[in-house]
Amino acid sequence: MTLVVGKRVAMIAVIDYNAGNVQSVLFALERLGAPAILTDDHAQIRAAEKVIFPGVGEASTTMHFLRERGLDEVIKSLTQPTLAICVGMQLLCAHSEENDTPCLGVIPQRVRKFIPVNGEKVPHMGWNSLSRCADEIFIPELSGEYVYYVHSYYVEQGPYTSALSEYTLPFSAGLHKDNFYATQFHVEKSGKVGETILRNFLSL
Image 1: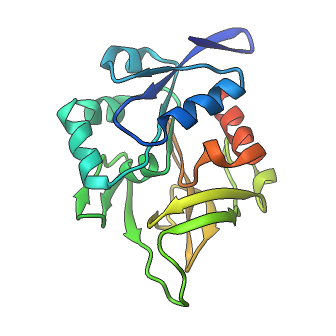
Image 2: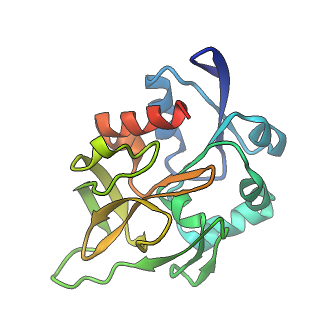
């Protein structure tokens, strides 16, 4: 399945690796007129013009699944625009505190567990605003807009942070390194703001 972007035809591959939010991501793309293939085929993923790496799950189990199927090396080798969502974003990092898990190491940042400081609940669930939006998908106009989160772990603010949110402390709402883009929140469940971010990614 394909999406016409300008005068080019772009194939979108959504990586199939037992992630819980895959169908909602596919539905979000379909609503934008951007149907995609759901695949774990290495050649199809590498040949796609754009790749989406979604995720809902536990870090160590998911990394084991990726390594078993060789998808860890496929993801690390991608050179086309790639968007990671939620746990997908965390797995791009070097290490997660969730079960002391070495991750893909695409982005040299660490994933920490939220520590409540004023009675906050963990997992963090609900709508939080974006700030300091500063790349092609997190355009500055999105600062102040709200997106939807469900997570117990977060990526520290660092040199690859492309947008911030705050829950107990500032954390990375988005990451960007080279061709890899990422959102900690569920872009597919974030209404018009999520649609804007997906459109921006698809237009890269």
